[in-house]
Each structure stands twice: as C-alpha cells, then as structure tokens.
Picture 1 (cartoon, helix red, strand yellow):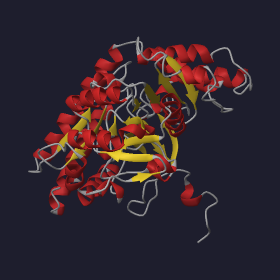
Picture 2 (cartoon, helix red, strand yellow):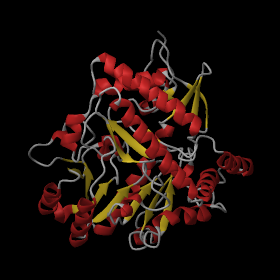
Picture 3 (spheres, helix red, strand yellow):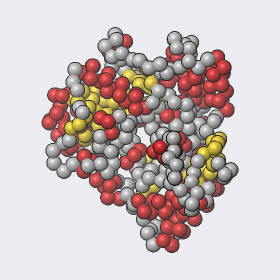
Picture 4 (cartoon, helix red, strand yellow):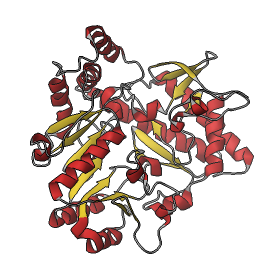
Length: 419
C-alpha cells in the first residue's frame, strides 16, 4: 500500500470518518445543509464543519462577498479598508462591555493570544482551564482533555507548562484552586459549554461564583466561545449563562467556513494590546477575504427571525430523536443548546466530568453513527460528539433525519446494546 502524501489523507484527524461497509467518506461538494461525497451520494450534515457553517455551507451572500474580495486581491499585505468594519460588526457580539477586537486566523491562535493578554495584564503566568475543555491544539491548552490521565486527577492538582485544571460545576474544587494557586493565577479559561465533553453546560450558580472569585483575586476570565459563539444569538454565550469575561475568543461561525478567529475584550483588558505590550502579528489576520466573510455573516444574523427558526427547528429535532429511541424502549436524552446538542443514553444529564465519563457509551454511539450514515445522515462519530444545526436545515432535512434516527434506534435495539 502506497503512503499518502498527506498522512491519513486529511490534515486534521478530527475531520476524518472511518470506512463504513467497505466505503470511505470524502466530500466533493457541500451546499446548504448537505454534503455530497465523491460517489455523488447526498448526506444531511450535522458536523457542519465543527460548527463553523452556522448559516449553511456556501451561503450565497457569503460566497458573493468572498468572491469580490478575491477579485480585489485577498492579501494586500498592508491595512485594508474593511478590517475595521469587520471588527466593529463582530464587536456587536460583545455588547456594551466587551468592545475591543483583534483578528487571528484560527481559534487555537485566539486562545494563545488571549492567554498572553491575561498574563501581561496581571503579571502572573498560570492559566487554569476546565477539565474536559478543548481550547485548541497547542500543547499547553491540550492539557486535561477528556479521557486524559490528568483529567482523572484524584489527589494533587496537575500543572503543565503554566497550565492547571479545575472541574466545572464543582465549587469546592474551584475554591480550592484559588486557595492553592490564587497568587499565581493570571486567568480562568473556560468554555460556556464544554462541547468536547458531550455538551456539558456549566450551571449559572457556578459561573456566578467563578466570576466573584476571579474578581476578588485579580484573575482575568477568558471565555472560549470558538465553538459556541453565535449559537444563542448575537451576544456572548458566556454572559447569557452568568459568566462575565474580560476576554472572549471567537472563531468558526463568525466566518461561515472561511478560516477566521478573533479575540474580543474589554477596553481595560485591551490596554496592553493598544500600548504594544502584547504585540499582535500574523500576515493573514484580518485580511480582506476573511473580513468580507465576517461582514456578510454578521449582516445575515441581523435578522432575528433566523434564530427563532433555528431554535424551533433544533428543539423539534431533539424531541424527535428522544422519541425515536423511546419507541424502541431505549432511554436517551439530549444535552446542550437547540442549535448544538449531544446524545446520551441515560435518563439524567451529567453535571460534572466524572458523571460524563461514566455515562459515555462508545459502542452504542458507533452503532447509531453507522446506522445514520447508511440512511443519509452524517455527524461526528465520537461518543463525546455533537450535532450542529444550521439555518439551512429545513423540512426535507428533518424528514430524512427523523427517519434515519428511527432506523438507528431499531438497529440499536436489535443489537442488544441499548445504550
């Protein structure tokens, strides 16, 4: 067998799907809520580029804006005439409090920059991130991923490369963090919803307590909204859930599939950027192509009726999915938001990482994922995976999806796994 020039045929293993029934899965075209593989088969998509295509694949208005940018020259290499406009449009997410913006190209870079800003503001080095949170693939923030050794901590709090861990929805563990390491703690880094932990949502009381402790300690708060940004409206998801961040990282949905990310912050937090203490470099950051994608996306989302339909559609799908399994005598629930959720084979949503770890059912998840794919629906096959809804999902997609879940539930019941 000849080795592939690109190992595994894909530059991010998170994007690969295993062969099914002797056939691989490679996308030739994506449009709206559909993927079309190299054999011409159509699939309703719930991966949606890991949540990046909130408005749907290849939305005409985004394509038109990006085409114009390409024709005008996508990389002038000097300040361009729409970067500030794109930043101002994006700042609407931050409301009246979080009003400063600087662009990066990836969410990982945005988190890296936010940590640098927090360290410069506080004069401290230590960043505490949530167990099970995914905050990019640079070594320091890959610490504490689901099923990692350090996530299973039972005694001493682990530290690696100026990063330590805390457990979401465990106020005792959070208080202990501040008691043990508060003098060194530059920032708390947390997602408003831990997508890679099966859409585990921190409780409002936990986020309010976290905000109080951080303020008292002079520790900054970084809300990593790269995955969930814009999925509850044109506002900060973190503030909606009771967290008051100093810095916010955004990506994915803000560019509708074009690679762009950003750091938002309060004027106070951004003083170290504006005075040059924290230099911001990057040839591609904020170029006309990505700025055009951001402007087109934010313009589309000015219409609040889009969100009403998105949430109604997602809620209807969640009910239909749970009903499909219930009809086969299988207990299943969904957790998360109506625009992005996870499927669990349990009667009670996990609150903390240990509960989530105990409730994942890899074999059942794989059985369901394989069955859905056989019936024209594709998503993220991980037992910690998510289903992303877009503005492009409509009645035709609902019918295909519900039928596919009914078949998947029957297959799961016949397999004897039953979650």
